[in-house]
Image 1 (tube, rainbow, N blue to C red):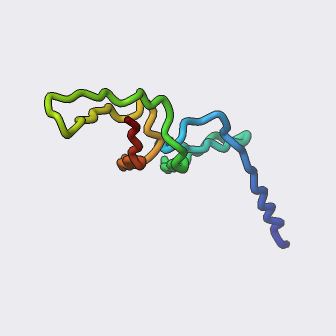
Image 2: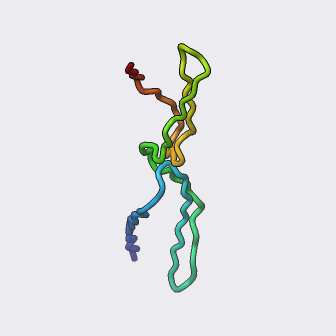
Image 3: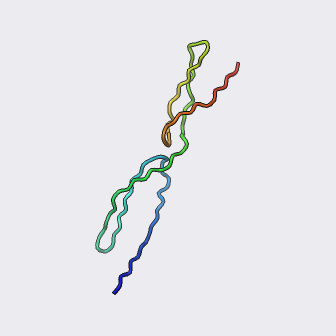
Length: 91
């Protein structure tokens, strides 16, 4: 007598997550005999654009230079990098 093997693939979308954040998952399956739990697996969401960047602070104690200072974004949403936009001045 043969055996019938059924393979059921279940997909679940875990939405509303934070960008560039690590999450851990495991699955438990059970039947009338009892449960079995998988090992844990880790997944990281993709990077997104940084958010909540405060304006830079400008100050000078020289005739020919201005110093800029700024803090990193409150929500980096990924690997940090810095970029200084072109500076424009007017008289």
